[in-house]
Amino acid sequence: MAELETTEQALAYLAEMSPTETFHVQPFQSGWVATKVLTPEQMTSGEAVGLAHLVIDSETGIVYQYPSWSEMMVADAHTAFKLTGINRAGRQIYPYQWTITVERTQENDQTITYQMTAESLTDPPEPTQHHPLTIEKHTLATDPTDWLSSVAMSHAEWMSRQNQGVWPEVATSQV
Image (cartoon, rainbow, N blue to C red; front, side):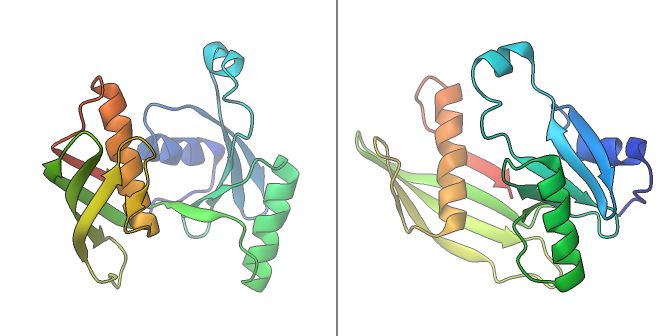
């Protein structure tokens, strides 16, 4: 992990994680609270409502996503977690912990089935997961319903919206 001692280093680290987005960072005792900078179009479309805050932990380099609380509440919650090790309200989003790949095996008007592979990027790694993933196209219900399958569904569905409703044959995402 790169050293994270300055605001410039924190912003550069966020740019590695998310090159197409810009962030405002506010330093606090354990790192920085980061907020995505929205365009005027994003502001008028309502994307600011419920906008999550990120915390970059300056000691570990882990980026956590927190609810849309005030910056002070997010900083206090993360500081309390660092001191006690309990009640972490944030979820690690970077460095990524999984690479998820889906390959289409079957499709009809109602459902699409993929073979899903989820490979752990942690050290030590979690066991690799291989299983079929069935998505109901209209409700987006998945079988199975675990969180990695939900992430895979969300990414495949997003790709289908980018491609005029055509679901991808193969898709890869990281979380």
